[in-house]
Length: 567
Image 1 (cartoon, rainbow, N blue to C red):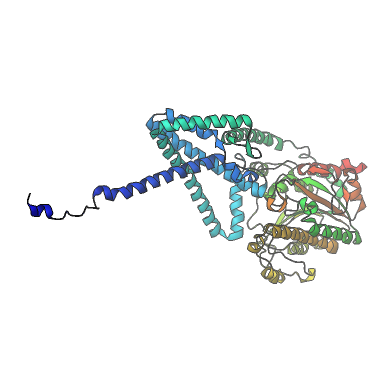
Image 2: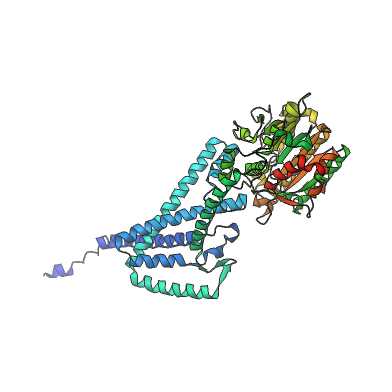
């Protein structure tokens, strides 16, 4: 080599070699891989540890050791490759489905204060979609439903992929996995022995997913068994073959009006946050009705539902059977069960239903025994909706008065009138106007425009509770005002709640009790129920009798039939 060659400077080292270019990519791949693994672990653990009741959904609930994860790791370690992957995907998908059931539970606890019934509640999802359509329109409701379906499918897919990924990680790192698994198993046994808990009712050594599955299987078996028993009970009815001249003889010549007030629950009267709005209205109503010659008696009924699905309460009251889920309801209305309305019809009364929020033909009206049903299409209302409620209760009562009760020369009537102004979201709320000013309902237009919007009210739970209580006060005021103004000597008014409002208003410890009241001028009517022990006035006290709602039909038919003449 020449001196010139030796003295020539060496070229700079290359920095664009293949290894130099690949290193950052390898680093990012490692970071991404480890991130995905951590996220997979977090997703699996979150699904395993998610409680299905609202009160237990706290950060501490997710700081536990699920035994199901330890068992899953052990299974993965002993399975061959292809089988291992298939089992992991199936297990992850199953976990996704269980998580969806928990999500349904949480939703049902939020609104109905109970868990989702895998046997009987599927039909309620369709009815929930109908309520959503009434609130935000058909297009918005369908878009929301599609979004929920996409999210549900995505959750199942993500959990299946997460389980598959972790199964591969476990297989690649068998030694480390075995050591970690043994340590966690020892920790789980120690925590289980000590009974350690970070959240009341949720041990740190968790087996909640196993318990959840076991409980659900038991509930499914119980639900199927109870449904079979219910279908037999529908066919057993002591009044089904009673002749009309042996029914309701104690109410001959009377007009009997049953009115359900939406969401009128016991808490409206007894909860300190709600009663200041409601009890003065009850006291004032008692005085006004007494001044008009009416006497009143009140007690409690225990509703089969909570927070919604009013038709379960209506059908329970009418049929004398506890209708606490949609499957029972469908079985009932497809049967020939004798209803309270049917009893009045057989005994010669004209029978009328007033359902202001029905927007379509109501085939159940035939089952109940109504000769005519008035709904939102036929009541002639020209004013605005008040959120979900299609017309104010005062208008509903005015239309009933105009179309049915106030007609001259009619025969005695049995009517069920549903009042809906106290339906969630309780904003905007109508106000009472002079009865002569009700007209076609357009008088309420300014009220709806000036009222609060649901978005404004639902920002603050305190405002939600206050507006709920105001809605009950309005509905009771409208009904008692109607009775005072239009009720004659033959009126017998029975009004009651269908269920408590949602837990956001009354909490998750409230009872299923609702108030029930009978109003009449004829002292013979109230003499008949003296043995019931109901209390004077529109407000039942803490010691007033409490009946299951399904007990009312038979008690009423017995008391006002020939058997009750001795009272």
